[in-house]
Length: 398
Picture 1 (cartoon, rainbow, N blue to C red):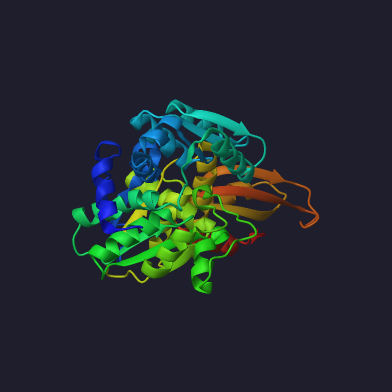
Picture 2: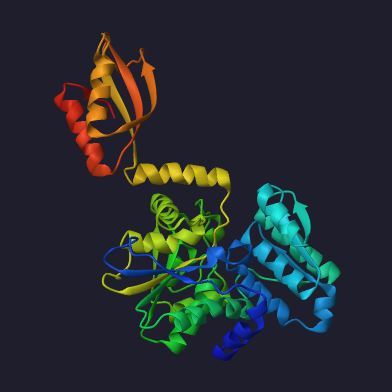
């Protein structure tokens, strides 16, 4: 049974296992709120997962520790279990789907775990892990639906309350619900007036839907680049705790999450993965009633693949008006390109790329298309550029 005493016990046990992450003030994320960031992306292994795994492993019997532990994950949980097992000197076996990113596979190996690559997807790796558990007598470390795991994640709530007074709200990402369950349980028992809000990706809103419906349900599919919270079905324990202690759950879009990642990079020189940035996105885009409030956003992880990060940055620049794609119809005669370039220069828009297209079914027989990517300041700046082009007699195709 989850209790406040168990969370305090976890805090004591984990003091030499995890890093106590700081709260960072973030005045620009939402100027109408007093925002702080709980930087679990700077935790050992790059996410909060080592807390829950570490406490659960610490509570195993001597016999269970001798046999070792097994887990299934393609990301943060795998690394958390591997590091925690290494800290306690016990064997860890991690089953990964064979399509898992090489960077995460190698990171898991670096913490001393035995990695088993399983053909197929996550469900195949999960089933293989359960098979090995039964054959070898390993203890299965669940990524979220275990009371010791939840208690370990709850230590984040204790740290938040110990570092900052008079907190109006804490905003937490939700996948399976282990993180918010621990945090909400701790905060609601120690500071009942503090609101606890959860955030999910629009394409993976399993807990959101379950709580709204009043019954734990399973999604047919999930679709989000925030792979750390792409969970089809919440846990039994986590659903009950969220239903009782979480004040509200909202969802954010992929574009909003991308913008949040970009904001953290620019404002804090901080890398967050998609799952780690959804709480920030919810506050940035006013999805929650936090105007004039003191708010803590939990940045739960920073393990994002570099190629995905590149795409996310590009998407974030587009959705925040920092870049703009234009297709301009020109007459095929000398001086047109110079006139367009002059407009850009006078308004301070920087040209990133240019493509000159001379044949298209949509263009005038004597015309051509100029496809340009511009570096701009914001949406207002884009509107000024478009207006100047139209006033000069050019037609914007898109």
